[in-house]
Length: 237
Length: 319
Image: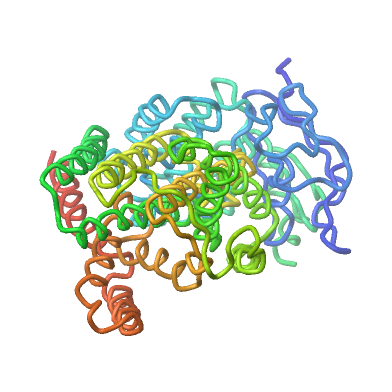
């Protein structure tokens, strides 16, 4: 049986009186890829923010790679087995592409030279070698998404949270992303991937979790979810 | 530019100070160069804080004044050598900077400029009011570092301090902290999300730059010998900001270019009177901001860089 790399129990988060995450239980095993889907405002990004420590839960626990990380900030050493990417690209505009990726190494105690060497390798891997020295603000939206994604290669995490990695990205880059994710998943990284591109993410995942109004509406295999009328209704609601 | 080129530039300044002192220049030019070194330390360190760490603090001349008055205090009250002040004072102002860094963690947007501006204003009022200790508007005196009117030692010291500033700036920007500081400047929330310790970075940025501002203050006190609260006036802070912005905020040599432009202008238009000097400098600042939004050096650098990058991209595509 595969090891559990992430376990969330009874997670709750409210802003004012509005519960954006309402009692979510979640479990991820090593080498598993879970697609997190749901209509806009369902709480998908908030769920990732709770797991990554950017939000502090009002209730519930989060265990990451065997350590209780509930309420710990993203800078905590116990959170290093976790990586997350951002919906809007998550890049630093004035830093070069290499420096942007190297940041992931620096916060994992790598020295700057090693981090930049490995960042350059990661950039070549995703086909952005020629723009390694360009500031991120001069790159296209798709290239910035790819930079954020390439950080994954430096982090080599136990758990990766990807927030809309393919939004605004062309099919060639989507294929590059798919092969890297599949390779890392097969090597044991557990993934939670938010995507509105259901055919793309269903082609990669073993399990789909559907969130609606901050709660788990249903979960199952891609085929089961595709056939579930409640999911269609939630998207149309 | 490579790292070794940046260190070569620092070395050039150290050697230049000695060379100019040996050749000898008119006192008016010596004064211009020596006070330019003071402004470079101030504008350069403010550029590090605002341009690279994104912390728009307006307490910088206040910190320099704390350094200058601190120097006068330890020289006069304890008989400490003015030379020793160059070591003691940066530690003292770095500690004040650390406290300002703690404030910066609690505030957002326009609150930091407001709070730091208030800090500088309150300090100016204190210096004027505590006339028993500070001499008030009459000024606080301290013995000169080197007796007599020979400016050569100060020219050498100016070169060494500018060189030291560039070495410290290189170490910061080429090290881990430089990249972490810039990530906080560009996207603080994303930086926090990927695990950057925002608390530590802000406090370090304030401490390093406040230490440099204190060093500038110690140099000013030792050179000028008479201190008045006007050294931390609003126009002085405006001048420091203008130097960094005109040269290129967030560029390694932005403050250097800004200091050269503004100090040269000040020198050439001084015949019109102090108030017109300020008007002319303001007009130049406006023109630069209108035509080179990111400063002179950034505009030039970007053009050169763009052509290099385009060639590289074209050759990569061709291969």
